[in-house]
Length: 241
Image (cartoon, rainbow, N blue to C red):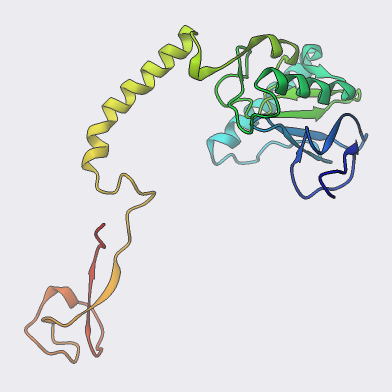
């Protein structure tokens, strides 16, 4: 598919994210077999799937835990009959995303951090917006963790967390700064703090004293203790940066 080809029916398989501005008609028809749509709100690229979301049987990280919480919240709303405010018609999805893009900087912005003063839309919660097919043919609008959001409120409550006067965000920034100050002494004294994991020792040849088990028979040394007979002794050391 070339950049000039515009998708007018969301149905077939795809192998890349499709940009709403260049690749998708905002009035494109969403096929009935499409069960999930998802939008990356940094550049408003979309994808879709044909299976309903499923909870993780054993959540092993924070993202999976939050996703399970979101799906559980969705089931609670379904059971209580309070899902109406979170449902959107298929033909409303792309025009709403188009409005969201224009109001948050337009299509000339190739990256943004989208936030709204709505439950489930703070910080990075709507880095992705997900749509899950409901039994009546509409879609449930969710944040990136499948937590249902009241989508009609989002447009009127957008804000920029980097230049916002919201006192909650100011307090959050103060808390983060205080935590960083408290953690600084530990970080500064830990030689491996800048690494994901401590470097592993690498073997290097050593021509000095050995324990007598190898062919380099010099005075005994702890450096080669436990090594098998070999032409030259090994010693281990940490590479220094």
